[in-house]
Image (cartoon, rainbow, N blue to C red; front, side):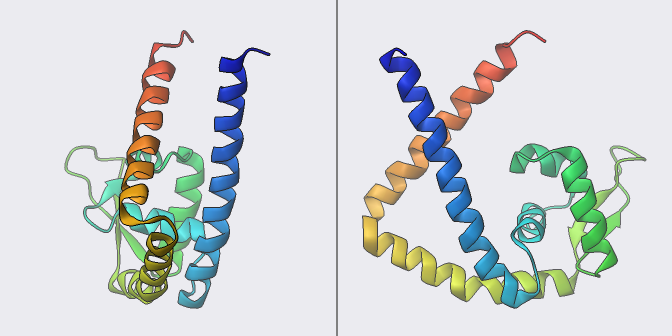
Length: 150
């Protein structure tokens, strides 16, 4: 295998490991608030503005079907609600209810503590550089995927 192929493999394996670590931490933060990491992820996507399921999937890098299942559960639990979408009659907008916002707010102290610990471990500038590198990598993969045939 070439060095370039080995770098791609190392990047993918590192991303998979990091994803697993973030999911483990997110589950621990979300559990006391009565949420799962996936519920938190979907609710978090609509905190600023309501979005259709397909928009949440795009923003969060999830499948539309997976988001739909979680969104329906959140609505059933009273943590989110569907609202009419002026841009598309069939694609309703998901938004958090006051109960959903309260659940997210219960996560914030633990989230802040983790953020502070990560910055203490790496330093603020290193965390900023890591975020920028991840954003560049994601944008590059988006461009490559868009250019791929089929």
